[in-house]
Image 1 (cartoon, rainbow, N blue to C red):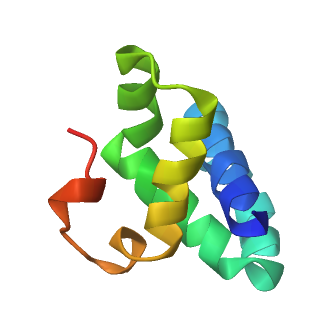
Image 2 (image 1 turned 45 degrees about the vertical axis):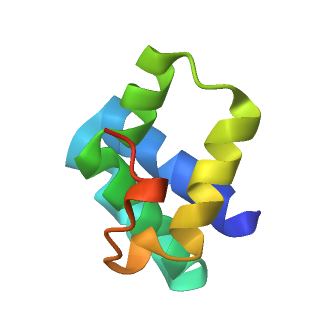
Length: 84
């Protein structure tokens, strides 16, 4: 859950402030590198935006991000976990 929360915070910072708060992300990455990496990825890919647009429930968002922690966040292209 810590990784998922870190990813959500990272995605928000990037979406809200861009690179302006890169120093905050670097500090977070020192203690929660997986969360920051996952957050950067979901920001780049627009995953949360796509899930919001699709009306995805919070529970499903957590399941999707957990899939990222366990696979697609490491370069997996498993279509079962891909948001298109």
